[in-house]
Length: 248
Image 1: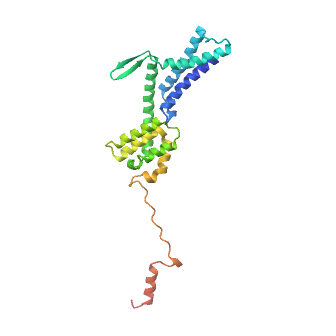
Image 2: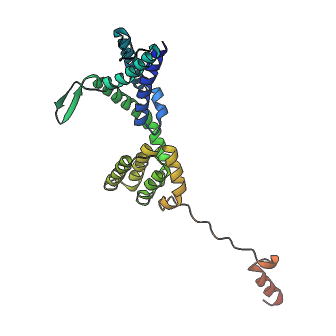
């Protein structure tokens, strides 16, 4: 039973890692999507089924020691199920796309269902967060500074992700949307890479330089120092003049 538990755990871990890599900004949302659980459980079931086949046919892969043979069977079942369920028997050309036919079709369908479920669940939250964080931000002033600063805060963003972000920002700059609409979409693009918390911190740090003129805070008015000697200020000389000229 321990071998089955290990094989299922390893196979499920691969499925979880694959899902988390697809939803980096808020991976905890995956817990509330049923299709993600189905995807993970199918990976675990594939590992258990592979180990059952190895035990049924008593494949030891040339290993004589029972403990070493059992460990080898667990590893082969876990790794083998990953490869089998991600393989395709043949490829069919449908329109302009190549469609793989085989065990990978099932996992691809479940991933697509997970994508739709997570998108629907995150859409409302992301819209609220993007509107709150990017309120008053000027796209013209932030299109270079804000992405560069967010990428500088993160240490493990791949070069491919950085290039994709630059391409998306350039396409956004060439659109016919208003400055506010482009700023809002810029926030959504950066949330995909850095997440809402990092984006909020970056905007707070650069706020004085990337805000629109209407949203920029007004400078404090200079304080007028009180008159020396504690007098009545400008009114005191007039009072002295009135007392010295009673005819007036």
